[in-house]
Amino acid sequence: MDFHFLLKGILLGFSIAAPVGPIGVLCIRRTISMGMLHGFISGLGAATADSLYGAMAAFGITIISNFLLDNQIYLHFIGGLFLIYLGYNTFISLPAEKAAEINAKGLIDAYTSTLMLTLTNPLTIMSFLAIFAGLEIGTTNYTSACFIVLGVFIGSALWWLLLSGGTNLLRAKLNSSQLVWINRISGLIILGFGLFSLIKL
Image 1: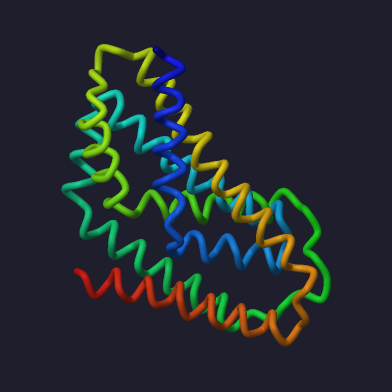
Image 2: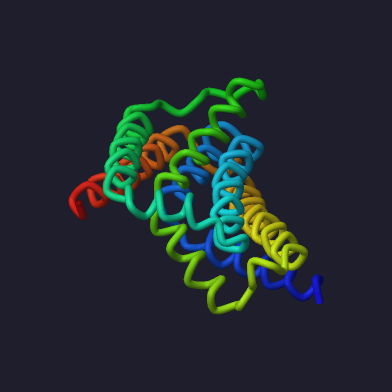
């Protein structure tokens, strides 16, 4: 029965991560400019946030979830500003002459930026609350809740692995001129998401 909840969590995590939004664009761009590892680690930041929100829904942590929902306007504002900042930096950045060296600081930045960006999206917690209510996981069934939260992380991480891996396969075929345009288009898309988030306020 617990394995059944693990599979549900994997499908849930994969399906929530799969729609290509600002995080997906950022992951693709980082994979192209810095390599697959940076793109995948960026995705893991989002997967961590997904599993944290999943845990709130699964364990019925209403105090935290209510706080987030009550302050969703501020979260939208912070997330929107952060997206605009990332979009602008992406737009003006030049493609690297060679793949970036793997260093701890770069990977930590890649992880924390997408973690914070996903955590500032209150729609994520609302999605999880609705879906977990439909799955009828009671707060007393902690074992099942643990398995489904683990599944959410695995499913989300699997999507980011597939996205960064697939992007990395195409990376070798791109020249510097194409990379410049990828940066510009990615930057405009991310900036657009940020402006849209602020306009919705």
